[in-house]
Structures are given as structure tokens and as C-alpha cells.
View 1 (tube, one colour):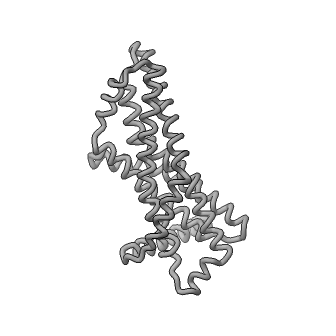
View 2 (spheres, rainbow, N blue to C red):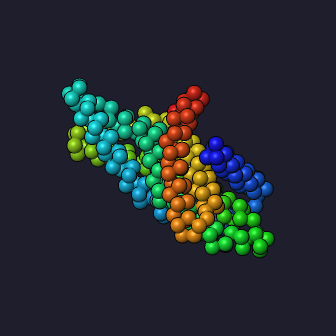
Length: 253
């Protein structure tokens, strides 16, 4: 029961933090210069990894799809369609969220945790500055803006990776591959970007909350960072199904 009570208290604290963040945003108390710095920081830390993962994921998808259809139909069918739909609807948003969690969100949780154990957050209260508006809100907005953009980079990289394998390995003409990619419509792209927005919210919420609850010095920072990454990744994978189911029921994607 103690563990369950602790979970409920933690959930309540996280909900309070989220409520304060939304309240500050609606009141317009936003540090736009910090938001911009955080967007650039998240992008610089993650874009190379996101593009690399997306590119090789597209290559693997194209190779496995082509070889499977060759073994069944003696021809590599629908490779461009499978690669583009898989990347835009599912793999692009999910892989990007996981990569950004491991790279940027972990750094964010460690940064906030260090501020907590070194009493910098307490100092903000002393100076009359609200930590939510100075620390959490800029990071919240930055993640919600940056993650969908990074997802687009991942999608494009994956489609290009699939194109490379299709031409070099499967001897599929560029025009055929591209015609299949063009079957994607706006709702498919919106589907992936909406999922990225939800994932961004989950990641930054978990990272900020765990950073804020850090205690116990350097060891505590390490534990909070690890906990933030693990919890965020699990939530991404679990909620992916429910978000996808909801979007499909709404006719999006």
C-alpha cells in the first residue's frame, strides 16, 4: 500500500506541475529568449542522431520489404509505399521520440536535478522568480515545437534511405518508388505530427518532474535522470497504441 500511495502522491505532484505550467502559458508569462535557446539546443543535440536512425531504418524497411515480396511474388512490390507509410505514421514519430528522450530529455532532467540539489531553484524563490515560468515553461514549449520538426527530418531521411536501397539493391526505378511515396496525403502527415506533439508533452513533463524531485546529491541526479528516461520511453510505447487508435477513429491517417 505504501508503494501505491507513493505513486498516487507522485501522480498528484506531476499533475500540479502540469497545471502550473499551463497556467503560466495562458497568462502569457513566457521567456521567449529561453524558449528559442532551448529549441536550438534540442535540435543541435538530436538532429544528427534522428537523421541517422531514420535513414538506416528506411534502408532496413526497404530491404526487408523488397526481399519478402520478391520471395512471394518474384518482384519487389510496394516498397516505396511501405517505407513511406511506416516512417510517417509510426516509426518516424516513435523512433524520434525515443532518440530525443535518450539525448535531450536526459540532459534536461540532469540539468534541473543539478539545479535542485545545488539549491538554485530555492534561490529563484528567494529572488521572487517563479521556477515554473523560468525553467519549465520554456522547455515545455521548446519540446512541443522541436519534436515534430525533428520527426519531419526523420521521415525524410527514412524515405531517402529506402530510395537508396530500392535503386541500388532492388533495381526499382526512381519514378516507381516516388509514385508510391506520393500516395501519402496530408492526413497521414498530420497523424504523425500529432503523435509527435503528444510524445513531446510526455517527454518534457516526465523529465521536468523527475528533475524537480531530485534529492541526494550527485547520486540522486543520476537516479532521477535514469528514471526520467525509462519512464518516458515506456509511456511513449504504451500510449502510442491508444493515440494511434484514437487518431484512426477520428479519420486522421
